[in-house]
Length: 113
Image (tube, rainbow, N blue to C red; front, top):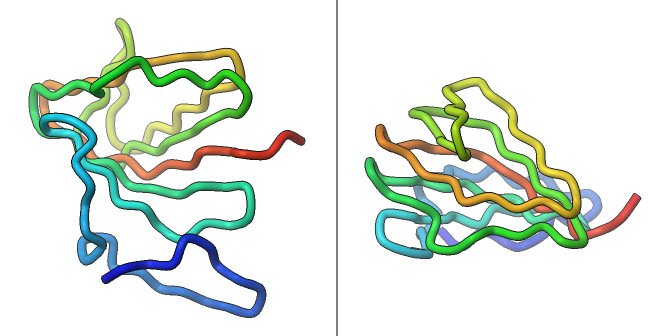
């Protein structure tokens, strides 16, 4: 399934996340891009056990947020388990990793309020 990048006015788009082809960002790190709204990129990441985001993820101008669906995501010295919502403001950076494997659903905000 190839999902459109945006949901247009009047559209309702159900997406089976597991049918969206993953893109490998680095060893054990896969992203599936989902339809978003103007100014919002929506995605699901799957991180294999022991994997780490390939580079420092910098949020200079816009923010990002994710919700941990399964497994654990480690950010620095903090571990975020299922049900945790993690939000990053502008002027932040992070490099998530996991020991258990993880799936997270997230958003990148590409507009300022």
